[in-house]
Image (tube, rainbow, N blue to C red; front, side):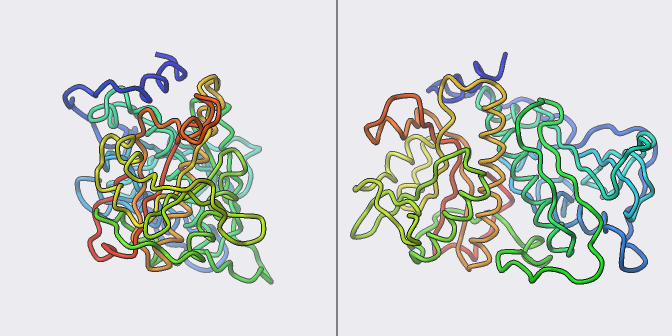
Length: 367
């Protein structure tokens, strides 16, 4: 099934069938694995720390990881192209997140750039085992979340910002990012939104219910962060309840602007595979766009950017003391038409539920 048809079907009302086997949780990389060790001193890119803070499993089943994933099924696989200036010798490696080891695959090409390029692909069976025909949007969103985790891990390790490839141009790899070796000499002041290593290792999706409306300043900042991280490919708003329920967006003047009046959360709960708890969430950040006539490249691009942006916003929300949970499965969620626009132009692509409560009840990383 092609991606355009798969997305149309995923947005429909058809229910997934019974669960099927998920298969192995990691690829069967060839040869013995090599241990990842911290660099002996400052200078090299710390691939041990980078992967431990982003993709490594913290439990034997592989479900509990720093990166959220739909159903904690973790379909995203990573291959590393390593150049000079890293804690591993140059070469191409496959990564095993359960054992936190790498498997040498081939030598690095002569023109390999210094630093490491992480290429991300997916094993669809892991996600289709539970979500069936609704899996493909989730696979792309999970890939975007993995990019966000790697990017934030690189910043936490004081590396220079990663160069991201989320353009959707290829279906293998779905996405990649290049992380250069750490800069020497003077560095720029730290970004206040940069997560620490402790933030990344402790981040988990909060279990419902997520009650309590976040402060307007937090909502504005999270919407602005998501919009910037999404690189302008999607629209962003937040549904809130309370005494003045509305859909809000981040205005150019630095304040929240009302996009529509009324409580959208019950409709969102129905559209999100009937997850009733969403109707009582403190706020729901929404990424919407990706029209029905989008081609495969745009579908990949929009979903990758949505996953990346929600991943960034989720980490920022948790750093602010908020409970946060990504919501990736949406059916009949034509938000544009609900707001009076043309039908099938602005579908909900991804969301982040927020609250001021339930932060003390973390759950294994679900999306």
